[in-house]
Length: 139
Image 1 (spheres, rainbow, N blue to C red):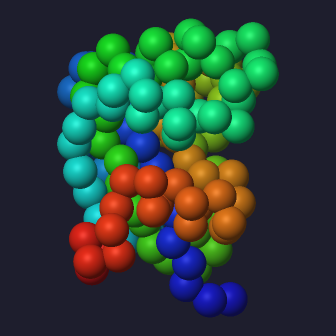
Image 2 (spheres, rainbow, N blue to C red; image 1 turned 30 degrees about the vertical axis):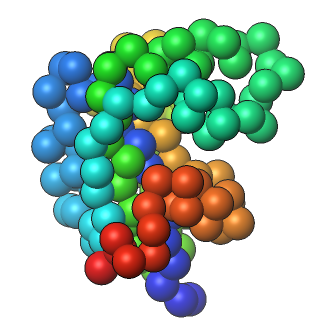
């Protein structure tokens, strides 16, 4: 296996609840190395562009509204099999169905307010990383 990178975003609900540090610590303890990190507030246009793949889905406008309601923390993570490992550590989208010890089980409050985003494939990860970070920003 080779080292790969993926993107996670600590979402506005988790930032507002002061869980950012605990989530990042959990990710480091799970073997991820943080190679890029920012804190920002997405504009409506940025959120619409980032989640454009979901534009035709019924939850799209609610998702855009949620992701612009407060600061987010995009983070580039690195490790072997990073995309799959992050998905495992995050847990199911619905925290009621997430395994104990996963980030969503610990910090999410609903399927909509689920604390953390993670890229779903290596190609998606490359696109999402480039959305938030220039190559020079990554260590």
